[in-house]
Length: 315
Image (cartoon, rainbow, N blue to C red; front, side, top):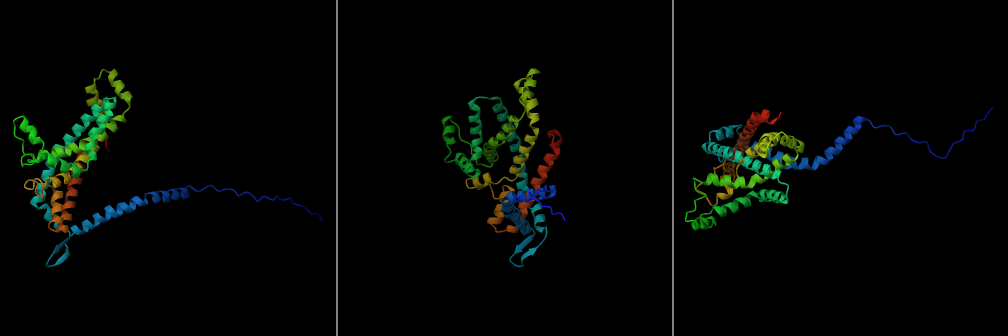
């Protein structure tokens, strides 16, 4: 009989690590990703989705003293479409869009093209000064312009008197339209200019060098090369401007205190909705007005994108 002796060491056998399955790794990454976006998702649902859902629920109901609150489906929306005040407000903000959107984009593009050609320290200072009005809150800016437009306290009165002329009534029915255009343009041109300037900075400089070698001047380079290259950016900020103009509220609402006879509560759809909700407690009808305006904004933005998608290269 033979006895065999096996020598064993004091170390435990090394465990081999199994490679992690791709599916489990993918699921782990998904869980980590959801963990990071969970705070934003909670805030987004609590402060946007839930209020929108509640407002839409209100718009489907009608409240009366005799019957209380009743579910009336889209009766409020039919009433909104037949409301002359809402229709006049939509027409008015559409007129603002026709004037303000091209004006803002043209000014922002012009300033951005000029600043793109400057390489001195003055360019950085100029960008900052043009952007500063956007940093001023809209309410504060409207109050400041209300003081400048005031027929009693405006420093423009002394300036016009110095030249022997009478200062115009900036808050009159004939000039309030252009006064509001001035306020909004002053505030938003700097913001759009920064976006366009950033797009121009992302263009390959070799394209400009090739244009110069072909004999293109500064004007031709700006119009025929730079502007077409950033056409998608121009479409984007045009949509931003269009949406903001159709939701016109802050500036006319603030200036209403100094021009109540001109800036009536139904001057814009948002002002009309605000008045219905907080002056007449018609929250159901105000919700229907707000959602109806949202439909108008969506249709206007979609039509613009549809008409410009081929020219701008958007698909």
